Image (cartoon, rainbow, N blue to C red; front, side, top):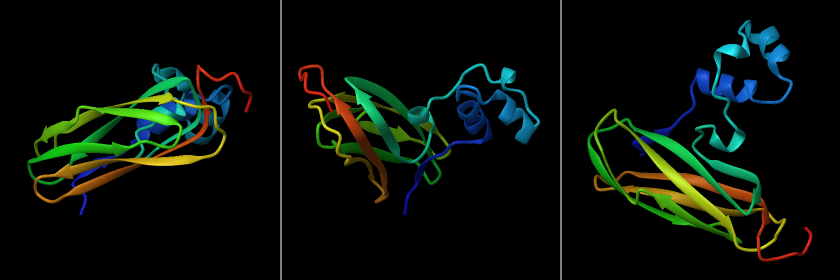
Length: 151
């Protein structure tokens, strides 16, 4: 059973929708809310979903996920397996997270080769109370700085 969750709320989705170029009129039409109140626009990879998808990893990218502990106090070890063609690092590698507390995970990704095949990895949070949380990671196009081959 999972005890930590990544989730996006209403304001997160509104910031994401308002961040799409030319979407302000559509958002206003369907929600009755103006995009002017959302000063921080969210890009797709930054939307706090319980997965990470990068359509185009051009050299490197950093994304964050905020996890919330919905169970009792727990200490987590963080591990990961990188998608093929990507080096990945997650910080912090240990979380001491109280019940109801939020913690930010920062994920650093670097393309290690040019490749247009989708590859998959994951981030795992392993709690000392037996809880396991998985965050799937997928990367489609990888563009490495050291390879001049076109994709």
